[in-house]
Length: 444
Image (cartoon, rainbow, N blue to C red; front, top):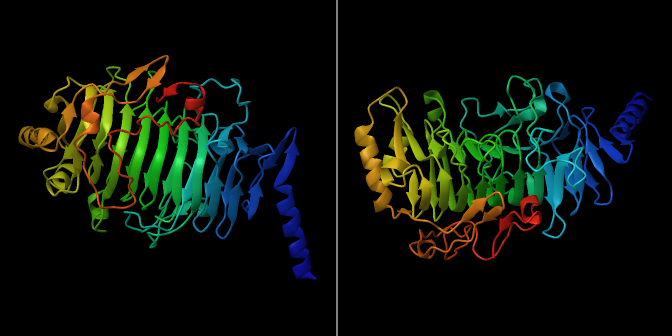
C-alpha cells in the first residue's frame, strides 16, 4: 500500500510539471527533471525556472520547435540544464531550426535584435575530464547547492547527445553577484557528443563557454554578445572548425579567452589545448583595448587557416618567471598560430598584433621579440580579406588571394579539408540563423 501511494504521488508530481499557461505548455522542475520525453514542434513551450534533464533521462526536441523561457533574475532565472548522465537530442534542420528564446519574443520583432539578458541559457554537463584538483566541479551560473550541477569525471568519450541547428537568442540573465549564464555552456562534455550548426546571438555574457572536456564543435555563429564570444577553461581539449564571431559596437570583450588554471591544478598533466581551423572573427575596434585572443596562465590552442579583423589588439600571451604559462606552452610547441590572415588589428604590424604580457610585471621584451618573429615564420599575413562590415550587415566572403593559398594541413579526419581561410566561402552555412534570416550575414 505504501509503495502504491508513493507511485501515485510521484505520478501526480510529474503531471504538475507541465501546465498550460495561456497559450504555453509550461515546463517546471519539481526535482524530477524533464523525464524522458519529446518536445513537439506544434506545441509552444515555456520553461520556468531551472529545468534539468536528470541522469538517465533523455530529452528529444523535434525540428522546428520553439522553446521560450520565462524572464527573471537571481532565483527566478530560467535555463535548461542537461545533467551528467542525461542526454539531449535537439536536432533541427536548416529549414526547421530549433529556437530557444525569451518569453516575450514573438519572432516577429517584439524583441530588439541586440536585447540581452532576458533569460538564462543552455547548459550541458558531462563525465569527461576537467583540469580541477577534485576532478569535478559545480558549473557556473547555477546555485552551488544544486547537486545536479556537478560536471567532470573520467570518460573523455562521454556522450551527452546531439545539438544541431539550434538558435539560442537573448539569454544571459544575472543570477546574482555579477554571475550571468552563458548562451551555451559545456562542462566536462565528451567527444561523442555531437554539436554543430549552432547560433548564439545577443547573450549578455559569453556566447559559448567550455569548461574542460573533449567535445568538438563545427559551424558555430556567435554574434553581439556582452562578454567573450568563446571562452575556454579547465583543460578543454576539443576541436573546432568553421566558427564565426561578430561583435557589435554596443559591447563585447574578446573573441576568444583561453584560460588555464592555478599551479596546483597543472599537476593533473593536461592543459587547455583546443585545435581550431577556419575561424572568421570580426571585432568592434572601439578603442577599449580588447584583444582578438588572449591566452592566460596555462592555456594554449592551435589556430590555423583563419581570418581575424577589426580589433584594437591581436593575440596576447601571458608570461610568468615563476611558473608554467602560455608563453612557455608556445615555446614547447603546444600553442600554434599558423597561416592566419589579420587586418585592421592594432597598427597592422606583427609587433602590434602579437604581444606578450608579464603576469607579475616582468619585462617581456625578449619574449615578445621571439613571438613577433614567429608571426611571419608561421606564415601569418596582414592584408585586407575583403570583408565588408557595418550597420547594413556583414559580407564575409574573402576575395584576397592570400585567403586561398598557404594552408596548414592536418591528418585528423574530423576536420574538413577546404581550400580557403576563414569560416565561409561562397556557401552560407549560417543562412538559417536569425542573423542570416534578417539578411545581415551575406555570403555569395
